[in-house]
Length: 386
Image (cartoon, helix red, strand yellow):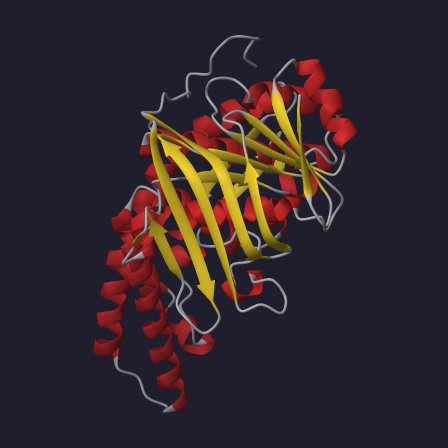
């Protein structure tokens, strides 16, 4: 564990910082028409469940990635009974004012603007105003299947690697075509090895590049995670993440040929990077089975903070950090340590939501860190400065 004041060797100095000064919400979730102002440091949003505090983080995430985090179905984020929503943020990036606007109208395509100029492709915005959110829903990374963990890998890598994103799209198209071909063979009681080999070659080509990129990612990401996990757990837990892939053990074309008979029976592709996973352990055992709730929470927090560091290293931009109700099921000692950790110069603007104003006041008062607080209720919000 690093001693107080000692810097982890995985800390990266960004070229630019971004700050969200004002957030305008129009018919977004339960916010009819609200404007929120934030400090450039630590911002706390407190209130009962259903008061709309998490929706503020969802809106900020929209301005980073052109989509929601908790609900990616745009129409479902429109206030009930309304036909549209608009989320606007007044930012400062490298001391330059920037206005971002995301608008969704039922039955129409989503529109995203930067300083009144609309993006032709939403993907062109990704990486310029990054944010990292830590939420109780992150537990799906541990509880659910490998798809959730691949999504985590893919999002982090794609933020600064457009070729990787294109390889993913091409791979998934080729995978769908190959699976359809296997079903066609079965339904028509036929088989064309030449036709199948064409898709084997395509899938293998994309898969090799995806595998190589993910392998490189883990080589960089793993030590960042391990250092931060030691920090968050205060050296109590030894956690690890390992890249699991069938392609670690052989060439994809050879692996496909070895599964040919079984695939003809099961009618889908059994080999490839769509089967990749991330093995997560604590003290040498799977965190899903052997980690306590507190250990799992610390594991996930460290994973997301590592994502923060990795994005900062790759983009040169210090992301916004969004912490949604993360203090539940973590003891006060770890909470206080975490607050102190994320409040150093490595991190920029931070947003914390919690149901307990008293708990946040107690923790933050002990830390001596200045902060502003928005106390929510279902009708309005009140700003309190501490």
